[in-house]
Amino acid sequence: MKVNPVGKILCKVERAYLAGLIDGDGAIMACLERHQEKKFGFRVRLNVKLTFSRRSDADGIHKLLGVGYVRQNKRSYDWETKDQMIIVAVIMALMPYFRLKKKQANIALQIAKISVRSSYDLKRAAKLADQLASFNLRSSSRRRNYASLI
Image (cartoon, rainbow, N blue to C red; front, side):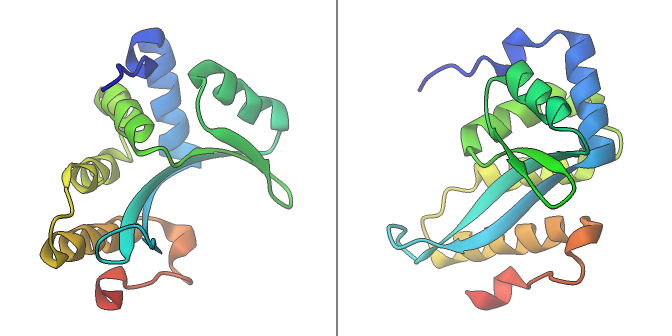
């Protein structure tokens, strides 16, 4: 297992800054995706996203962390990562500094710890994904009950 440098390269001020950005303009999400290579045909995938009005701000986060990618929406720019190991490393590094997203971060870590060996494990992860989705206001109109899909 390779050592992830995210927590090591960021000083306390940078970690607090990033946690504040995620608290205010970010999202910690999980969704159920069909995946042919998985034993039960699905996986629960974490996603961390920050939204900015200027491309330079999103690029700055990408440069600071050295992970993820930047994409343009209609009127904004998102920095995001779907790499599960990176997400766990980022959440662990930022956990002491979260204020508003501490519960979401804890749920995301619970999801990451689940090793899907049975349909019960997959359902448990999907239920946690549903719980995490309930915190995200933007997803309320398009929220899905992932646990019922399995």
